[in-house]
Image (cartoon, rainbow, N blue to C red):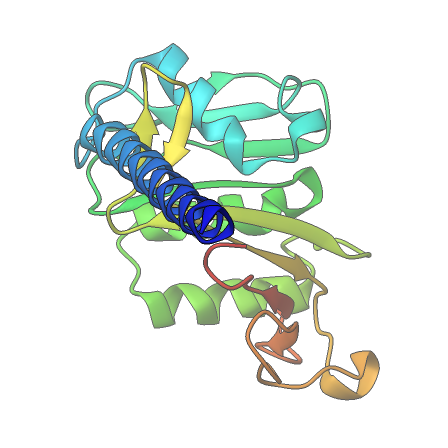
Length: 222
């Protein structure tokens, strides 16, 4: 009889421990979800950030060890594209444009600057996407735009509902992708597919053109 009571006591104890463990897990998950929601709510669409906040947010697009020395472009109170900070290394960062929906910050190697700067200039002239692409392509082939003679990387953090959490100095709701520019590369010269073989796999976009690049988009959550 005593053995049966002991067994019953042990069984009840196990059930109680299991319930307590499940409750603890639920409380932890609730707390994490709540904190995440609070963090996201601190971000507003089309943020108008100060100069220092633009710099602090823009450099998140660059590799961590290169952020402090990167050059940073951003926007003044009139929405004009300006230099926010000169750089001392090879990276250039661009802050999010508050006049465009969604959130996007980028960084790229300085060897890509002639190509990128020409694109910005043509866009400012009112050229359409196709016009810009054609003009820049011809100028790159003619040597009017100095193209990188090796590969050079561009990093992007973007998100439709993304933004910069000023209080916590973090980027939220943004997804990372990057491209490695190899001007005029082809499938034959690289051995790459012209489409991803699986999520996150590298592939060659715009083969044979000045803007040829390896596209790499890690799956969301990675």
